[in-house]
Amino acid sequence: MAQSRSGARQPLSVTKPKLAAQKPVQQPAGTAGSAAAPTSPKRKTTRTYGLKPSQRAAPVAHSPRTMAEKRALALVVLERLKAEYPDAHCELDHRNAFELLCATILSAQCTDARVNMVTPELFARYPDAQALRAARLEDVEAIIRTTGFFRAKAKSLVGMATALVDRHGGAVPRTIAELVPLPGVGRKTANVILGNAFDLNEGIVVDTHVQRLARRFGLTREPDPIGIERALMPLFPQQDWALLSHLLIWHGRRTCTARKPACGACVVQDVCPSAGRAD
Ligand code: SF4
Image 1 (spheres, rainbow, N blue to C red):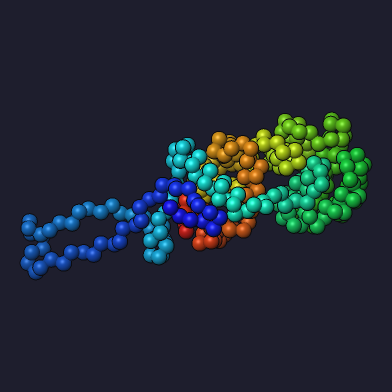
Image 2: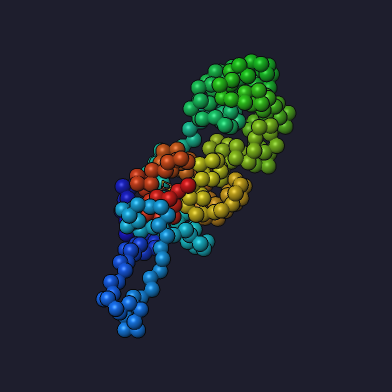
């Protein structure tokens, strides 16, 4: 059983270590092909995935196949990441649901750090839906320009604020069904708001990091975020859904990055089927 930095690890089935390459048997002259020549037992060919011999010596976890295997792996990953990132949280600065909604709309195709640079001025000028609804588009565009796609985002922000005032008395609604029709809001944004502003676990936020890690763990092969969310929901306890997204996002940003995953420093290396061979 492997040990982690964060404590004892749960066992999970892994494939046997790779067999050493077998040397050809030297036959005495004149006996080659004779009936008396000893025959070696047939050995199963193993795939090396381009790993160096030192890497191949370590056991490689297999991809989970059944729901039971996927659940077992999911729980190990969840507990390990909880221990590794005890402070995992939403990295968009906000003080209430309205601010988080604005920040999440701005975070499309943009880093959280960049969004956090513009939101203090935005929230100071437009502290609530009523104020943002009355804003001039050009003024909003000037504040959020550096987040990219600023014209479309300014339109979404003012449109969202208008819809909040017209349909919800200026308050941010608490259901996916009411959030998704708002301008600039999709299922991912709705899940961010529900999970972080209201502590409601109605769904799982599936961003680019969650998509990548779910596939690397072999938990799903679904190609789109909706399918991935549907596949992950039965694998993880519902009360952890919001936290799960933060954990996967933190792990994806810090260790299991898209281009160069640091498998050697990863706390789930021994149970990850992509360890040492992530694409
Ligand atoms: S860093 Fe490597 S071992 Fe860790 S989750 Fe990513 S692919 Fe798996």
